Amino acid sequence: MAPVTQKSVLSSVPTQLLIGGEWRDSLSATTFPVHDPATGSVLVEVANGTVADGTAALDAAVAAQADWAATAPRERGEVLRRAFELMTERTDELAMLMTLEMGKPLAESRGEVAYASEFFRWFSEEAVRIHGRYAVNPAGGSRLLTMQKPVGPTFMITPWNFPLAMGTRKIGPAVAAGCTMVVKPAHETPLSMLALAALLEEAGLPAGVLNVVTTSDTAVVSEPIIRDPRLRKLTFTGSTAVGKHLVEQSAEQLLRVSMELGGNAPFLVFEDADLDAAVEGAMLAKMRNIGEACTSANRFLVHESVAADFGQRLARRMGGLTVGKGTKAGVQVGPLITDEAREGVHELVQDAVERGARLLTGGDKVAGRGHFYQPTVLVDVPAGARVLGEEIFGPVAPITTFSDDGDAVRQANATEYGLVAYAYTRDHSRVLRVSEALEFGMVGINTGIVSNAAAPFGGVKHSGFGREGGFEGIHEYLETTYVSLNP
Image 1 (tube, rainbow, N blue to C red):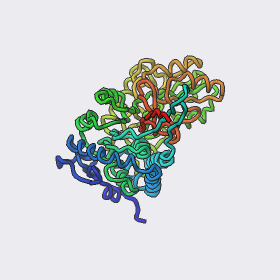
Image 2 (tube, rainbow, N blue to C red; image 1 turned 120 degrees about the vertical axis):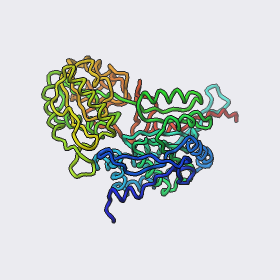
Image 3 (cartoon, one colour; image 1 turned 90 degrees about the vertical axis):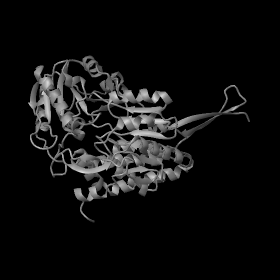
Image 4 (tube, rainbow, N blue to C red; image 1 turned 45 degrees about the horizontal axis):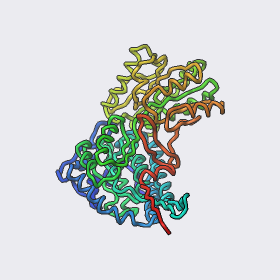
């Protein structure tokens, strides 16, 4: 087998739009560059889709919808199963491509390929488990029947931080349910989605079921699709501000909407916690994906009796991480996605320090090419510091303290977001009390990772609505029809 190299993966990835089973250029005949965040250099140019391209993609999805909905569930599931197997076989190629365009180390990219492919395996099994029900009318006489039908053509907007997994988490249940799709990947990282689309074609997905439109002008291309009366569902993963705007647009057609938005995850460390395990969990919850994750631990709330010890331990681990280009052996922390993102992280750190926070490690940009930032630990972070209220999206861990369980829960819930919370404790009674009191869609107890294809992923409050993954995930792509039958 030929070695996987930057040149080999870039030469094999499609760079055109996929519409109705045809790979073609944009109608404008223009392209936009995809950059390597580790160097700033251009990797490739991809087709720059227009409004007309978006409409053509929706045309193709609408045309394919009836036949795809009528396709046997087992056949739909087998497409996903074959795609899972192909992804597994091509882990190294997909991981290299992801690292080049997004920046995360190769080991993390391989982990994302495994996580992403699992959504295809999970929903390949769910395709044949779409059930209705039969019941006798409680008043007698008629019968009550319900059936589940695919929602219909769906528009998917995916983010740059998990360019494969956020795609498969949406595409998997849509394919299983019998929905056709138009996908608009993030312009920063379109290559992983283009490679995935080609792989799904190879797995036997019919023409027009999945259509991919890459563009540098998401808002202009997306709005006409969202406002088109033929579209039946919108799903988006990204910032809360953009999500709110999309929900407003979706109201015109009363679309089914799924929104997976921002987070401000608290990481609670109680006085009885195993500190070694808590630090390990903190490294996972904070440094997964370079901290560029909506599930990333954003605020470390530590009991005042163990805060100093925890902070020193975490700083030693964070300060010992190797920063560099993700394709290099031994690198543990890659670059942030853009220089603008890096500047935003640095502003949050500077604001905290100016307000009185102390740096235990890091706290600055890394000199040279690329968008690198030092892994950073802040302690004595005062209330009102921006780093406690805004999504950091970088390798920065701010630590504050709490005095008792009530104080911990109060501080944890003091945010408009509600995606995920983490807690470390050995008290089983506290586990129940705290889990029930936390206002978050997901809670991780003594673990730094909650994401799992078999579990429902999603938040409450300003972190959005709807669930992806688990038994619940496929229902986002199904409508219920009730039939009253008089025998």
